[in-house]
Amino acid sequence: MNLFFKGFIRVNVSFQENFSIGLDYNPKEEKGTICLLRCNGNHGENVVFPHHSACHIHRANAFTLNEGLKPESHIEQTAAYSGLEEAIQHFVKLINIDTAQADKHFPPKQLNLFSENE
Image 1 (cartoon, rainbow, N blue to C red):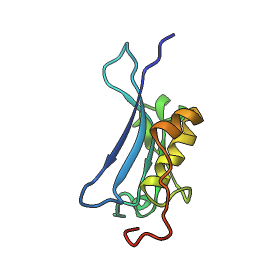
Image 2: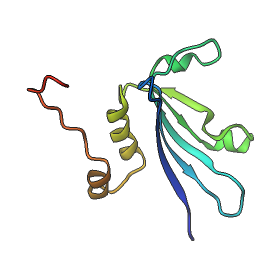
Image 3: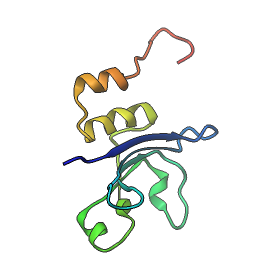
Image 4: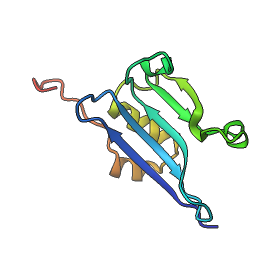
């Protein structure tokens, strides 16, 4: 059985807190993709989407898929990350990427305690 998935990272160049890291499933027999998971940053609360005031995770689940809703419409706020770099590491753990591959392609950012640029 061949299954096809696509990961993505999107960041607003003007507003760095507005990011989305996700995993899409691409069923070969159907047109389009199904978003299974998105780790989003704090990109501004509004009346319709109050969860946007904090980092949050969108997940597909059986209920949303069976009801014909947008797959990733189940939303939960999270304290697991507070910025893009932490969100990438959290995402890598959530989707269970092999540790060696994760370290190769998504190395954790090293903080330099003595750098004035950090």
